[in-house]
Image 1 (tube, rainbow, N blue to C red):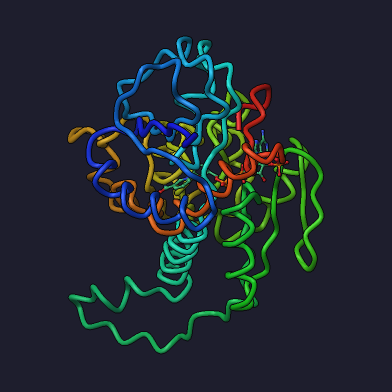
Image 2: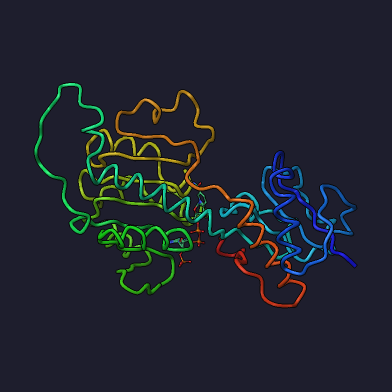
Length: 310
Ligand code: NAP
């Protein structure tokens, strides 16, 4: 009997995902009906995004897993009605997008591009920017996205150091963990990239104290989550020159309110949560593979640890 897979992913996603998911399921050898509505007790799997109206998972008694289209799961992980396994999205094309965003914004600052693109006084400054090998990058979060970005920056010559919750060994990359490790990772870094999940532990990772550990003039790229940074502390550090620039893709409130000081600050660049999107073709293959695994009794990929929150 074909499985019933409920697409509960908010407006627009049915049209984007229906054909690629049906193709990927067929390719994975999974016989399934993909539906937008079904009696809850008949649903085998739920493909989910937090923009869905589905917030109470209690009646989905037969559901074997909830498969998130989003990499960040902070809006669902604490849902007390969700007792089914939750898998987050690790999508190769989403990762490519994040690598491109991080590399682009890193090179902007590394190569002093702003000073040439906007140069109204026609200043001729023949100083060459340093080479990447002369710059240290602190990658806060070295999971699926952070490690890919770390590797890409390293391939250009940047001295990348990573920071994670638990000790982690990555060939060729100096790694740190825990509170003391954060200080070591930030110290002397020219560029700081925050690719941590939003959890109670990561809230305000960059705050008045930890921003004080940074090299004066360091640049921050935040494509992780807005809550990783204390907004007021960042603004104070920018005004004091302790932080040279912040390029921010994610915010505590999105869209970023029109009157938020980030919009007007000369040393802040706002991008509207576009760093990396889940792409239907590749993510459908990940979802189909997880459903195949669920049916074969194999462990799910990208299972969220509820206690850790990511
Ligand atoms: P991931 O694979 O789960 O990696 C998370 C990393 O953060 C791991 O290295 C983890 O450490 C580390 N971490 C978690 N809690 C920590 C703590 N308390 N202290 C130190 N390190 C900690 O996640 P991912 O797929 O790379 O995604 C990261 C985040 O990117 C997502 O959660 C989401 O918020 C954000 N994101 C943003 C966009 C966008 O468009 N802006 C798109 C996709 C994702 P361990 O290795 O020890 O577990």
